[in-house]
Amino acid sequence: SFPEMARTLKLILAYALVSVAKSEDGHSLPSPSYGVPDLDTAASEIVEEVDPIARLAGNIPGGGVPGEEYPILRSVPDTGFACEDMEFPGYYADTSDEAGCQVFHICKDDLHQDSFLCPNGSLFNQQYFVCDWWFNVDCAASSDFFRLNSDIGKLPEVDLLRSASDLSNSYAPPSDVAPPAELYNLPRDEETVITTAPPPPPTEVYNIRQEEVTEPAQLYNLPEPTTLPPPPPPPANLYYTPNRRRSFFG
Image (cartoon, helix red, strand yellow):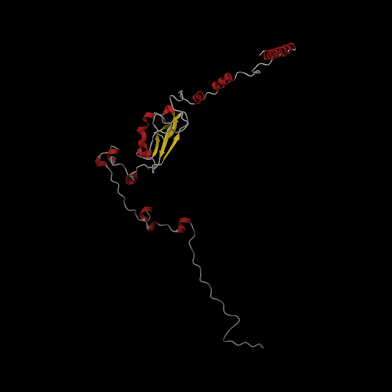
């Protein structure tokens, strides 16, 4: 109706007058964004700065592309691997397409199975049972080394009897040693046979005869010993004589 239209026009006119008055005072109307940058543009810049794939590729040697040349799993996938299918207990790389050898399983004697992930950029090396850089592992050939699990926990096979025999023979001359005559280019008739004679008696060793033994006095120029006279008899008893009576009065 006409009254409503008149009211609307009055409101529009009042808003226009207020805007003109503020502009004359030197104050501009605020913009809708209040000086804040565009959120969509800022978000795209942040995503480009913290690209996890690019950061991961920069920290892993070899120059490979993560997710293409080697897997970058966040959890162990279900690949259908079962320890019941393995011949020996031990460590097994998961060669499935989903795991790509980044996953390995430990099979115990009771067929209990534990599964693990190698760090991103590394794969399970079936030859050495360790996580190795991705460029050192041929995942397709890992199954050729499953048999190495049969050697886990075994001592080297050593023939103790043969070792003892070798030890005893190590102190004997080899059987192919030539005789002394051939070793020193001597004629056979000049070969000397060495026999062990019994030791001579002491008199022969020192070549001493009984009559040649020198007396100690001659050896050291000592004077001849002299014969001492026998000791004198003991003196008579001066205080007691059994056959004589003494008087105290004279």
